[in-house]
Length: 124
Image (cartoon, rainbow, N blue to C red; front, top):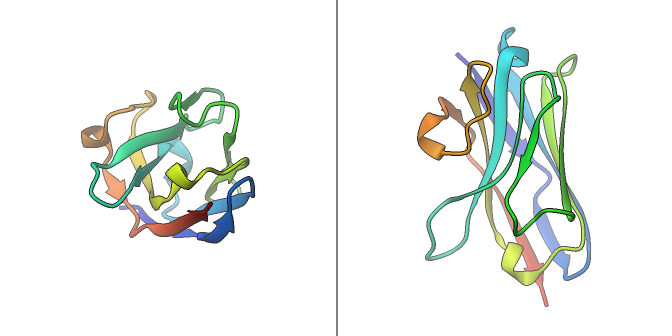
């Protein structure tokens, strides 16, 4: 069992930066791929970024590529999402999720554990 808690959300002006963190409980978290997803008001939840268990493989949605960076520290059981050059369309609730196995899924349905989410609001 893995429990995930996101933090770091908030209100920022367009062009600004935020760093989201996902703290995980469970000794085996380092063997889980981890992803970030987001859900804007009135829209479906969508993939943002994902990282393999050892940090060697990274994946990004086209909409955030070059602006967001995902990373992990297995010694601290944390995964981070550095978000730069934020745009109003990045406004959403951001969720951290963990998936068993060596592969890095991009589909939500393949993730086994989810956090409660953290709100990110980007003002224009």
